[in-house]
Image (cartoon, rainbow, N blue to C red; front, top):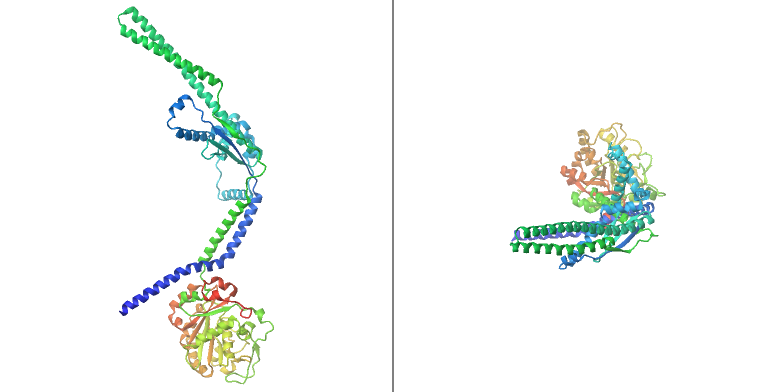
Length: 625
């Protein structure tokens, strides 16, 4: 039963975690939008500007159209053939007429009518600035790559051949640009064209309509002529056949008048040929008359007027397209930026990637806020084990921020760090190391502010600079330090400074030119002997340690430490670096009390939090920032 209960509990936990993950998807999108919306808006604005610039620099184009009606006139023979399927025949005929309108032959007729092959605007239309830039860039790229344009087709020596080739190229271009569409289910066809010259555009579509009607009329005339020629040849053949039949009958009568049956067949054959000759002759006369007066099977319903207002470019269409492209490009960059996000930002980043407690956010300190505030000063006072007669010195303003501005988020975070360290630490002195993964992440600032806050509370606190290879306490006066004490050259009491305002004792690293590293065996042995003595005199000992990535110092001193405070720079320390280091150094991991994020931009912090996370409820006040 116990196992069953565990399985049910695990199943419920997994279901809850799965539901939470699914519910958090929308929160992720909202948080990502808060972070990246400015980027998307910037590219939308760029798209708007580009659209306006493109609209201004694009040449105007004019739309023209003409409408023709295709008649349903047919010959008597056509009517007899299609009587049973008129609709199929009608649709097929209309599609055929549309193919005629789209043909290269009709385009060639229009070119000849209006000498389009000599029109410079049609042959070399103006282009927009964007198209010109792209064309120049393409030509430049082709030149840089050494690509040569295809050689032009060899020109013919005959000027007439050159002219025909130019006309054919112009007709092919016109065939590509003309639009032919059926109007609804009617037998009307719209011919449309968009060009840069309104007069030329109207002339083109009207010429197309006229050329189509003339082509249909000529086609009817040609068909009539071909039919008449066929009938004429057929009549000649019938006359010859009739003459042959009559000659055969006359010869048969003279040679054998008794073949009555044969003579009757010849007579019937002659009558049939005569009747067929008369019928074809009548039709031939009708067709000859029809050929003299050809009739077109269409008419122009609407001729194009010269347009006064340009149809293109449409500003709203151009601007909307460029804005959408800008939004899409901005969204793509936002997705790429989100995919590249690999730094600590919010508390859940610390929990999810390291499994360590989150100690809080430390906002970036603005020294201008400390103007006019007296920084804690340090001098020697007769207090064991501090030496006497040392000159006082003042801390930089940002090093005393926690005591000068106690109500800020920075100070509250330090108090939270102190409370977290207080749990589980041994009595009789707590040795806390403050370190970071990389240099310049603000560990020294945190260590000094933390030690000042602890000392101000009335506890005996000692701050030791153990970053022997770093900048250390460069604001401290030159003199002996921890290295001198460990080497036995200087007594401990002559190396410690005391801050008047908070009572903090400070032990610098020392003034030796070549200081040994804290990870060396000799230094470690002497530190092990010194730390128990310091525990007797101080309630808290804060060590400013070198960065973890700079060497094995922190690992070498792990046995002397009670807790480690790890400082990571907000938006700068890679999560993978911290995770891998702690995974390979379990001894260090066990001593880390948590991670504090330093140099936080508080005004941007809420953008990285999902709805419901602590950072999403952050309310800033002037006193907290």
